[in-house]
Image 1 (cartoon, rainbow, N blue to C red):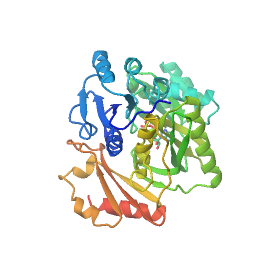
Image 2 (image 1 turned 90 degrees about the horizontal axis):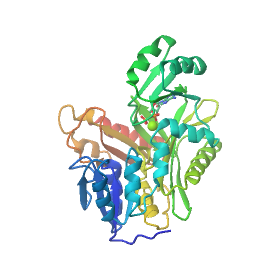
Image 3 (image 1 turned 180 degrees about the vertical axis):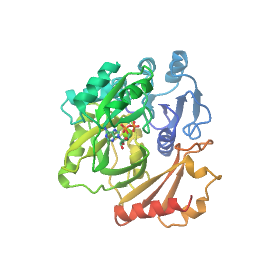
Length: 376
Ligand SMILES: Nc1ncnc2c1ncn2[C@@H]1O[C@H](COP(=O)(O)OP(=O)(O)O)[C@@H](O)[C@H]1O
Ligand SMILES: [Mg+2]
């Protein structure tokens, strides 16, 4: 256990909205923040004391960064292993590099999960066209082909509906390593956000229900509409994964729930997660504050929801005719606006989100979605 006192500097690899909200919570608690990423003028940089713009492969810059901070964490998991190792020469890094290595690659992640007895959709490693032909025969159609590395918001994925699509799907991989997964006709998607401290302490936010649109998270709400048995199993699987990893920080596991009550792990995020944005405001301690507490050796906070909550993402699409009229969205009582300070609102790009609390999760969903509808 290494206690990092206030006024120390927390280093963050990555500079997006997750790092921004982490930095807001870190600063609230009296920490300084230094962000490191290849970009400049970033969502995290706006809130940080220091912003380094350098390639993750520039190990001299990484060492200089690590020497200037007291602890390092991440908001982005696709940081190369060598970068993490270089930082770890100088300061504690949470979660540890091994966890990133496993979770940043879908093949390693799924192999870790199935080897440890966690339920996942049937999958195959795809390196050659032959592998893909065989995989489709064994797994059946529909199936989903996903590049092993660097996937987010559905990027690097395609559905294979029939054997006839195999050649074209393989060509689309462009030589990248991939996995083929059984397509799950799920009833719903849920996630569990947890935090684990350096002393093994554990906190969870229960089960959050997620609706995606075009493979991008659209709306989340909590508590999820699931049975007690599903709740207990999803939380226990997530706790157990965090334990296996010796995890320190905030982590999220995404699940598919099938209509016959089966739970399958979809993926692990070794960081705060978009579905946990509804903890920022509606909970005693947000997922970002839990990460601050965990990496600084402080006790975890209460993860209690003060009221049922919902979140709706704001994508760049609603900027089509210029800056949205925020006054309209905020005219709905109970709505909070979060914007990430991104200058370039491209379609599909996460620009911000709305949260709301109400007497029930369904009511909170109604409030955020109605509020968002006023913007387009
Ligand atoms: N095997 C699958 N069966 C059905 N839907 C899937 C499958 N894999 C992914 N999806 C859909 O695509 C979304 C994004 O896929 P995911 O694997 O979580 O990648 P990422 O979030 O990294 O882009 C999922 O949340 C789900 O809605
Ligand atoms: Mg996902």
